[in-house]
Image (cartoon, rainbow, N blue to C red; front, side, top):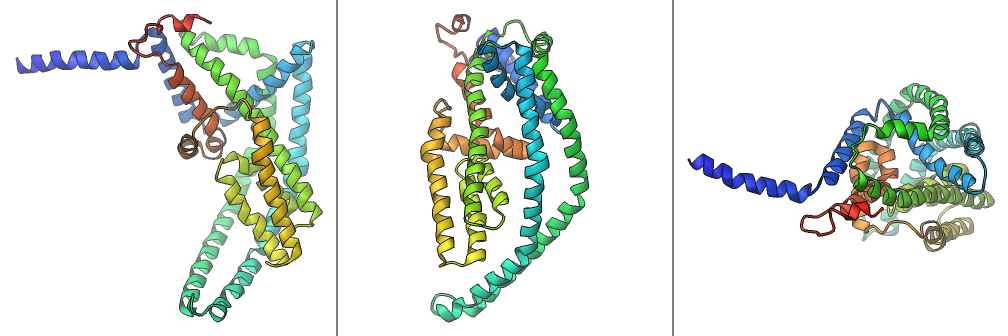
Length: 370
């Protein structure tokens, strides 16, 4: 009898909890779609990463194809035009930019022992210059830690070199498969979407509303992010080349990629840029000061001018939400998780904003106002 009473009490509580989370059939459909998509992406990301990368690239290029259609061109003309520009960019990346960056990266790694030795010499002078602040025993302890870290770094580089053949093979597979799939995703967009939608529930008005909001914000954000990467890379390369800074192309690529990690990337890239300038010219030289000022100007213009222009319609996410998204999705999918952390956080925000709530008199009709 006591068990029956407990069951009678728990059952209404459980039903009430389910009704709060899934108040109508559209919420159930959206929840099922999100769970299935997340499970597929998480479990098959390693196996089908070329497919996912192709879908993302095709989605980004679709915005340009849509603009050609709006200009009056047939879709097939826009597809071929945009895809040709895309392949030209891929050719520039793999056959011009990547070899230069690889060569400068190798040269930079080869110079690390000399840089460490020079750093050791400068550190060893500290007890003589500032005997009251730091002792010689403390300096020796720092030197021991530094040498150990350099040794570990060297071992990691050897392991990376041993695995480079696999990376080259994977890059060749990506180089062939991804552009081909991007082309067919653009060319046969309507047929593929029609085939894909047959597996979705019919009652998906809430899903459509969430997707429209996400599509409007994510499309602008990712395209703006790619534009920001390109502009920062070009401006940094021209600036570093003008000052004849070593590894100008490599550092310019770092400058472009820093925007992938908001708030953190700009801090991380400061060390290699100013570090190379320091080891090339010294701390008090005019060239070092010029590079430092130019670097500060580029970062300031990016934050004050470039970001407001490119992301005027970007989502309004709190800094804590962005950092949590970077940590969470970066832990799941590595670099690509970090890159798409803010768009994925936007998806979460859109779902939470559009999710119907129990007791809302408009929850049953709000999704049919489209």
